[in-house]
Image (cartoon, rainbow, N blue to C red; front, side):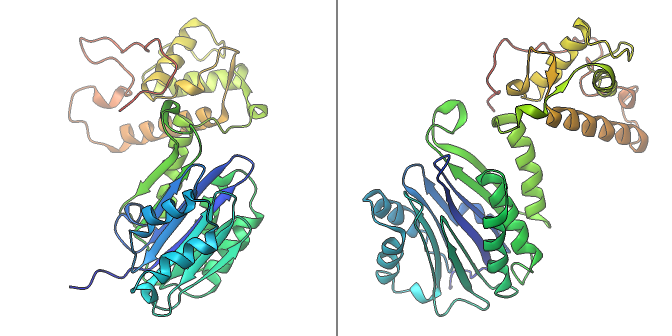
Length: 333
């Protein structure tokens, strides 16, 4: 049986300012993140797709480690591959050089656009505008490489993307010491393996990952916890069962302890502060969770007596609420 052919659009990119390499991809194919993206900090990144040759990943990284430029890596990989006419490949090297390849037998529409520090490629697309819109978006979007990669995927989908539809998406980025606790280089590795709107789901998951694992927020956006901000936090913590006091707007020791427990139980220790300020992302997340809890109580039939009147942070009957551990790093799974 012939291996499956699947339509995909992707971008490989290098951010010189932060020495970060990244790949973003979407496809009407299950678990595309397990096939397409490959990257190594200080070396480069690749996307192998169409009738994907997964050997392009390790073999391409080996060539990049030798210091070969992206165009030469593409040439060597494809010339040595008898199935190259059905392959598609994008590469960025250690210096940000970029190159792409689209085999002559890739299913229409198939093609690529190469720019400074990035390459966009896709096959079985709605049309050529998919990759052109991706390139324009990457070049014009502000923010760091993660913001730009996600915006690029969304731009490709707005132009039709994979003409058969959507199924999975992935975001992969590496930088030296960027992984959990600095123990590896895997800065971001997020996959949506099967979903009717995988790019939107990827953005949603990334939002939580960003809050939990990364430190990208602008400190000028910090909010002072007083007045309406304080009473809003007290209200939302109360809905979720972490706070049972009055909504005074006074950020007292009881309120601080409730907030600290919420942060700990949601693995947001990296967002905890001791200067009386709070990150807007935490305020928004807490508000969203409180609103969701209110909906749950309104629309879910009670199964256990009293369950709907209690937030998830409330102590279990006969038990005590958990206490935040004395640590600063995010909790491991």
